[in-house]
Image 1 (cartoon, helix red, strand yellow):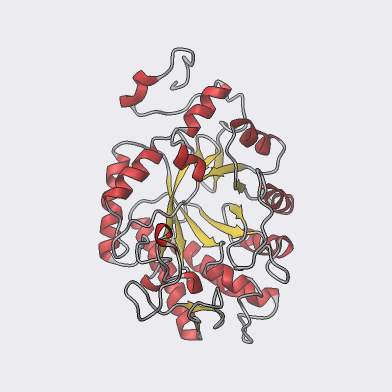
Image 2: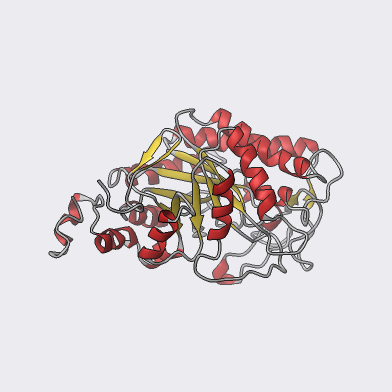
Length: 366
């Protein structure tokens, strides 16, 4: 029996995790035409031996135009599927940790340079760039090329691209799908009145703005294996006046729950260039708490969760059911090991690592 909430089992749909630590999806901008490379074998392999409950593959584009940058991972071609399959096969030889994937479309925030080269948008006629699409022809920044407003036929095409990616994920044996409806990317763009100024059935009222993201969820849920969970990542607020907020997020979460969503992963921001974020430890946890109070499916908190006692407190106080770490896992890929040692808990470790167990933590690796 676990002595902590952090290291107690949790169930997502029909998938049971050993503990409540989620490795959140983190873009590394190291793919080639959507194809994973040796970088991903090393990077994901390292995280898959971390002792966390589940590992989430970084934002994976469902179409070429849906990539954030030319270096993003994709799952929209046979080549991309084969490359990901190669990486997953290598990882599974080392670890039986469940692996999820975040399926995404960047919308108007696509066609950008990689972060370490500035991250600015690349013009459609420049090398590495393309024309972006969005609910409305409103650019993310005034200096950016305006996106093309999606017509009805294009919405069908994008929805089917999500379905095709989910089908490929199922073939690859991925354990769970997370739909990316946060951080200002396409589905979030439909949700927020700041980016969605359509006058058809996909714009205006909250019901209309939720319509396309819910259609995508329904289509993915129907296609992905019924015994494996589909979750959604949301931005609970735009941190901007007149934008998406936590009350609307609660309404969206309730609709997702009705449709069989297995968990809500609560982040924030990313839609408005003029956002004003109040940043600090646990700064997004109140949003997770608010959503958890109004739904009955697991809620995942994320954002500047770096300390072991901090993570445990979030769970013990009932603010969330799971905690996700991202940058903290990059800085310390053995964060779950160290958390388990701190609490006197047990984690799984590859047999090649068993000899490294410190003498004072005699039950760390079971």
